[in-house]
Length: 470
Ligand SMILES: Cc1ncc(COP(=O)(O)O)c(C=O)c1O
Image (cartoon, rainbow, N blue to C red; front, side, top):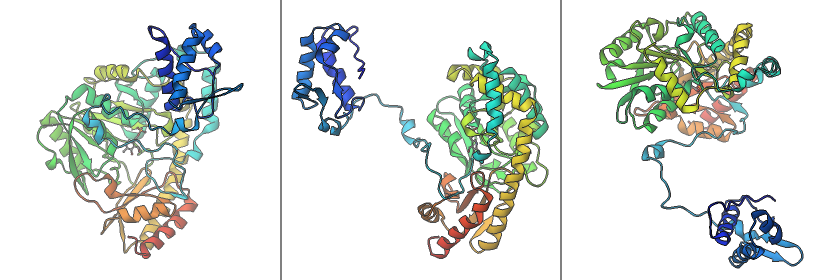
């Protein structure tokens, strides 16, 4: 085994070898039962005398970390691993803001039997073959320019395609110069907060709402006001005076699924102008629209440069790409590009170039059309079964787009959600997304659940309701 021991700058070699071996045993880099290198070999490698290494081994043996077997070598003892990690009580502590941020979700939680979680597309239908071809082509062409540092604003060809796509599909008219490629929609709130908000400033989010933007702001020391949402959208009159940024999901409110009315959109824009505030418009999943004509995004209604429009490739393709975009007023673009540069420089070039080619050759639009059909079927089926089997318990909220729909309930649904998870059904309670006011109801995602799993999943949920878990 190659144990890394660094003696540069140390004068007490024996103590340094002892300390580093002990640390490697305690943190599990060297496991119980593993053999240490013979003293002669390690001494040679470190250019120290053999007695120096032997002395370090002897001390570790005396303390119970090592045991020697004559003729066989020196081994880590079984009990060594059982020692608790040192607690570092007085170690470096993050700012208290970070204590309030919950840990990230477990990345590889096994899929349950019935997966109604919101916000994920059907990844079994990701265009794997096309994507492999597009990435391979980029790599095979030996494009060295893709392997160096790229443009923090985003690959030029991709920005041009995004500008075209946003214009055609969402009526977001903007040149590529106003597009910034992001690491997913989530990065936008962070970038905007970096360039516009100071510690202690006030921002507002929808309540109920998508938690990460609120957490991003709070972790930066921004005060965040939860503002109630009614049937028309965020209640503009309830946004506190002094608010500098409002994060909203007008096309498909997360999690309620409603669309913000035109009157409310105009009221919000007027408010933003009077308050000298910025609106972050998260349009994360409305490429999938099933009925009705979409209302114009805030971005298109805005004539005064108040809106940062946010799009994502997570729902149309895959969240693993970590690719999204923002369209910003020209006054903000240079600072946002600098913020992206200072944060993580830019998105991976090869993936950006592959996505640009996918969009340019029409595959992206075809994929959206294909997936819209798939999700429409699930949306209709889910709505029909809820109306047929849950009318006494749930009132579905109008939702014409995206990958989830919600339903209001008369009682707290969190116990039901916990019971459902124990019975192989993953879904969320509206209350999971509420900050201040209670919200009773359920959120049904249909990106991850195949159409044929919807009825059996809801039948099992119904049995839990009837069994008195609700
Ligand atoms: C409302 C909303 N915005 C943004 C995101 C995250 O998007 P991205 O993966 O692009 O960061 C999600 C993901 O579920 C979402 O539901």
